[in-house]
Length: 316
Image (cartoon, rainbow, N blue to C red; front, side, top):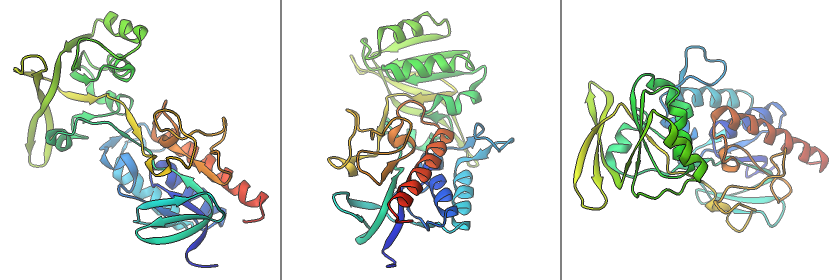
């Protein structure tokens, strides 16, 4: 078999991709994982992970991904730091181009994930994972008895804000307009919550904090009024960005079925896309949960789906 041909190519290397690699490697399918621009996915920019089973004391996000990668390669998976730039699913074997090289595969597992939409300001990047977060269910626990800001005006922001009141004493929703995109029921629920208040017609201009001896701490935010341009400084212990997620699926536009946002559509109860032999796992096909453990679960499903596909077509 050519070194350029593989039974399974996995595109993406977060919990879904690496779990797929572990399972397909243990099935002697010798998968190759193209890790892309952000090896390890979103967990590589996450500090403490306390809700992944098996780590009683918690584990750093990058460390968790490193453990999973080592486990996959132990069983024979090959992880390559290559970015996939083009795919062709119109013929079999499938064609995948990565870093100017062309590869073929009998099956494909897509686990390119989704990226949180961010504010794109330098201070946000500086404090990401150190007081700035895009996942309340991941990090809300760390803000017991504290004050946090939630940025956004849609259902995601309302849901995150309500969830954070389980821990924080005060939650302030910051939104650039007076009107909200959220559904009325979600907005009403937030307004009825005594721990939630609103600052409308404001955007975050800068995240404020300290960085001493490598220890970063968020202390506040500089807000700009969208009507008169005035600024005001607000104290806070954390900032949650809740302006939605964007699935990393531009590579597959016109090649695979997607919903209106760009999430890949799969056959219910499976990871099968509309192309036989191509499977999708993790946040790339999940707009609801977006957790490391659910991504890993669908990564297992995709591996089993791929294995059965190969066996049924006598390609295994």
